[in-house]
Length: 286
Image 1 (cartoon, rainbow, N blue to C red):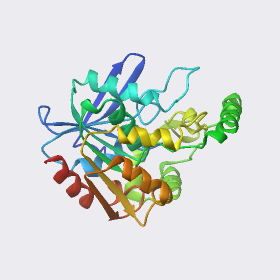
Image 2: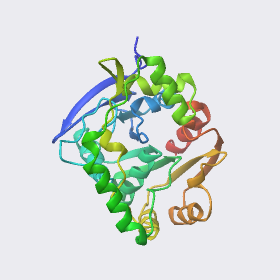
Image 3: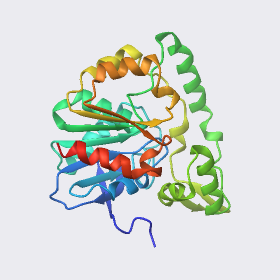
Image 4: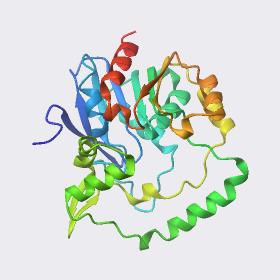
């Protein structure tokens, strides 16, 4: 039996992109769109979604992740393209204004959407996220060269084959410090059969270096443009890139209405969903 038997499976084509995902809640309940982290999928939100009644929760696999389609051959995963992806999906789902919840990479995408289209977002929830990763302007040339070199070498990259699901589970547990149950929530939508075992469904292009990142100044301006009331949830002990002087400057720019630090690791919504759900439910009900 699927781990997500309590959810609705859905698929949708928006332009050239095919989407797949999970949904919880009544169709006419207030809508929220939930965006998962890098190399995760909709399954990462299942424990949290089950604790958020009274809302229509749309939880997609982002392009190149889970059971959603990969981008067409010859294209790449430019981070800013997720903005049009998310807004195109929202339009196809009939969501004019909605709550937006994002974890890690999904949270960084959410800040781009909320900063560029503040009128579309009713409330914003960031779980272990505070905007995209920045790079100093001086690093631009070296970053670009490294990314292009990786693209040119991609055709030589072979997918790692896991002999069975247990081996894949152990690999995911080791990569993220997850429990077996948490890893299971991710691998159900992440694995596909291959000769000799299983491979990850995610597009290998997702693992290539980013050619050009925005600067810290640009992302501070983006955070300042967000007008939706915002809840930020951070793990305790702190994730290194979400602490320190840069993180404090970003928080000062964002001005979240609520900031909470909860015990857990980077996937705290997956590993310890009850306190996360309590905070999110209270915030969204205001």
